[in-house]
Amino acid sequence: MLERRMNEQAVAIRCRACRKTFTPEAGESGVWVCGHCRGKNPNLARHFRSVADLCVFGLLAALFFLARRLEAGTRDWRTLAQAIHAALFVVTIVLTYRAATPWRSVTIKTLIWVVFVAALALNVGVPMWLSGKMYLPVLAVYGAIFWYLAWLHIQAAKCTPRHP
Ligand SMILES: [Zn+2]
Image 1 (cartoon, rainbow, N blue to C red):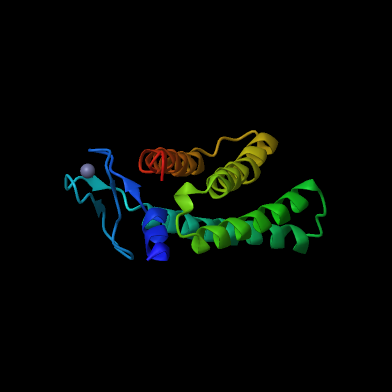
Image 2 (image 1 turned 120 degrees about the vertical axis):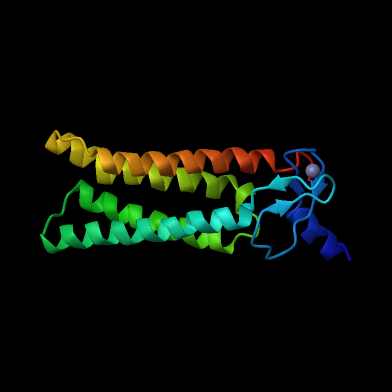
């Protein structure tokens, strides 16, 4: 009984509309509907899984860039940075997939920002700076990703009860 109550508290969501707390159904795939006012709340579990999926693409990209540099025999700070970046992606992916409520973890939310800002710096910022060219389409993609991350960050804060 106590365990069940703790589980329910662990996933307690504060409704964006009426500010009351409710517990979404486990494994629910659509929006989380508030039991008090029928207000729609974003399915944070699903959104954080999407971010973890995005991190898998990031990891593949980091491994690709790392392999290309190693193959070319380039052993510099950028090669080391790509290796650290890939490792950070692995940590972020594992923590996010394993967490029951990743939107409440400051560590996970911080790591998500760190890996994507690092991706922008390493894969776009540095190459643009070295080549003197603007990669506008790539910047637009990153803009969309950061827009989504910022939205999700705000939703996570809104839907977390102050005193769970
Ligand atoms: Zn509500």
